[in-house]
Length: 170
Image (cartoon, rainbow, N blue to C red; front, top):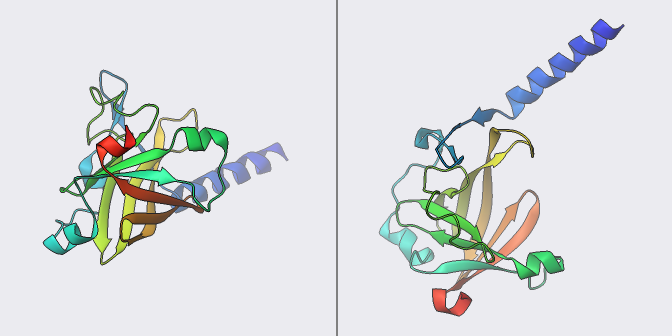
């Protein structure tokens, strides 16, 4: 009887890993998980048309206007900085720049890559599979850019980001 449960457990585990592949990354001397850039799906060069849609000289800060949020989220909104090479940096307001010394574009915690199709944005990132795991899963989120606002769903939750200059945030 126990053998059936153990076998069933491993079968379920196997199929789950097939549906949601995870990746294990080596760490650098600071303990940052370093990923191979070839794991990204988005490797196309951005065009001049893309830069008319997104401003790579500005920051996009999370706003909770019209969205459900709690006091902790409102006190520490997420900030995104999009680069012209297709990478984006993800940081939080309270910890902005604290990890710049040890975290670069190869770090799984840096942010990820993005691509644009008209005013549709796709953001690709790696997130820990669990709190105590050194395995990561790839997540691709889809959103829309309207004027100076990005509206995107992360993990089935809508988030809104508004374009600001550095001086307007800090």
